[in-house]
Image (cartoon, rainbow, N blue to C red; front, top):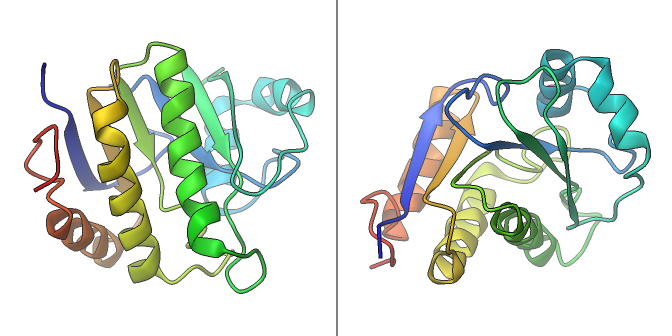
Length: 181
């Protein structure tokens, strides 16, 4: 069985041309907004918002998939993360976003997925806690993955990237091994 690679990189989630699907940190109506949703919708063009109308609304922790339109990817997977301190249990709802996105990627036979730091922007999830939930969820999902070979976390700033790298290192995920250590 080939290894599953995991990466944490600083960059723009809407500019990941080597990835099959990028993940949108969406709002319930899947509309363009600020942050990740704004960047993805802006790069994808108006067709993405039109397609998303039929998929909305989504519930917290849910993921849905659409075409990528003007993005260099095949798909966009939209996840509604929890608003920290409001949507509870926030850790389980956040984990559900990553889990459901990977299940959708597998169902489409995709080999690569790029995630942002879901819920850490205007939804207020503390970065270090989000990084731990993300790393643990991905570590738990790796043994179940058949087609996904690359999972990339794309973080906006260098400090955010460092926080996720630390959590991924502690979970044994940055070596590229198919099972956490």
